[in-house]
Length: 149
Ligand code: HEC
Image (tube, rainbow, N blue to C red; front, side, top):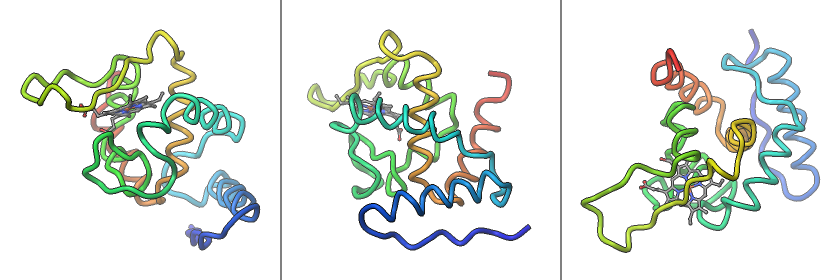
């Protein structure tokens, strides 16, 4: 099966178009991982992310792997966790860190505010920031971490 070569990053309006084309190409079955969510779901995820998450976690680019709060983009390490792990952190907040200093950054639980569909939409949006290899790796983690969930 032919692999898609990711389009080089462009500025401004063309980028949206190229992302659209890439999404369409992957949806057509060129990628080896699961198909991306439909554009409406991704748009909804983006809306939620920009309203509730971007202030702490930053956007699609920039940052480093060991930053706290973690970056969710391709520079961060969120893609090392399976879906069920990420969903639980969003729903319930991160696990307590009793050994951490008092001012260690933390995160509110969003379970009262966001439905399971909202959380899935945010993750679908975040996935669009990852490389195809990262998405494949994360799919594998989801299969390993979340079997039976
Ligand atoms: C007030 C700041 C803040 C807000 C707002 C916030 N987060 Fe977080 N988030 C954090 C911090 C800090 C951590 C790391 C906590 C830890 O490891 O103990 C974290 C961890 C995470 C993780 C685990 C990521 C990883 O790489 O391990 C996910 C997923 C996540 N947040 C998603 C979200 C989403 C989605 C939203 C919006 C709905 C959101 N966060 C809003 C501060 C925030």
